[in-house]
Each structure stands twice: as structure tokens, then as C-alpha cells.
Amino acid sequence: MDDIQTTGAESVEQTMAAALVDRGVWTREQADAMLAADAVAGPDQGFDPLVAASKPTAPPQGVDPIDAAVFTGPDNAAAYNFGAVDPSVQVDQAQDMAVRQLFVSEGVPASIGNHIGQLWNAAAANPPTTEERNVATQQAELVLQRQWGNDYEANLKAAQQEVQRMSRANPNLHDMLEVSGLGSNPWLITTIFNLAKARGRA
Image (cartoon, rainbow, N blue to C red; front, side, top):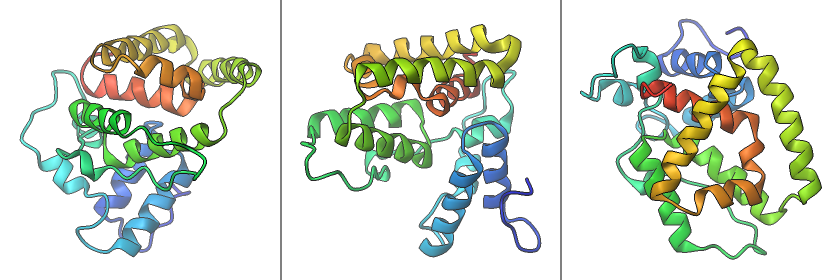
């Protein structure tokens, strides 16, 4: 991971950040930003892979322990910080809490949940048009076909099944993904697939 800046021996955080990039969970830019934020926050304030990895729950059979550790989320909805909301956007507090609770129940790491929340806030402030969503869908298909190759159909189906499963607990989820355009975000689709994989469902 030459693109993630390190000094001397790699810290545990740097090793886990590199694993996140390798698995397509973060881009290199997101990993560098998270490491920088952790450095500013200081000890016990940022992403703590040791805490995630030390939780006693064993990974499902056949699941890489690193994948399982990477996708270990907080136990408290307050751990998620979706950032500032544009003043023009009216926040639905019930929906916000429902999303947070969904993230907790699904074990979504705070770093990933926060990024999803920030993407949602940006889309809420500037919703994509139908044409823009259609173009994004076509572009996402091309990106994921390049990324997954022969596994494209199977991986996409696994991600779609995850969304359907999660929608049973949060019926608004499908509409939220559709209206915001996040349902066509290659990073989010890949992340949902990786989450399913870490749970032994893909």
C-alpha cells in the first residue's frame, strides 16, 4: 500500500486501513483522510481496529478474520457522525435514527456509516435528476464490471439481496437509495457486497 502514507513501522491503524483499501471498502484518499483524522483526534478518539478485532464473536465459517474484524461496528447509534447538514435540508429525525439503528444492527463500522451519511446529506442538498440517476446507473455498471470481472453478476445479486434483506427492517431504505442516487454508487454497492461477504452471506 504505497499510497497510504506511513512513517517507520506500520501502526495497527495503518495496517487495517491498507486492508480496507485492498478490499475496496475505502479509496486510498478515504484511508489517508481517516488516518489523518485519527492522528488529530488522539488516542481513544478515532477508529480503533484493536477494539473491533478483540470482540469475542467468531467470524462465520469460511470468512477471513480480517474481513470480519474490518466490518465490526459500534454498539451505540451515537457513535455515527454524519457531518453538517445543508441549512436548506429538513432533517427527518426519525429517519436519521432509523438509519443509525440499522447501521448498529448490521455492524456497519462508524467510518463507513459516517461516509454513507455524508453522501446522503450531499444528495439531500442537491438531489440528482432522473437523467443523472440513469447515467450514474450506466457508469456504475461499467465500473463494477471492470472491478469484478466474471463475478459481476453474482456479486451484484448478493449486494441486491442484502439491500432487500435490510429493507425488511427499514422499508424506506430502497426509496432512499433510489431518490438519492446512492443505489448506483459503485463504492456503496461494493461496500454492501463486502459486508455480506464478511457475514458469510456472499
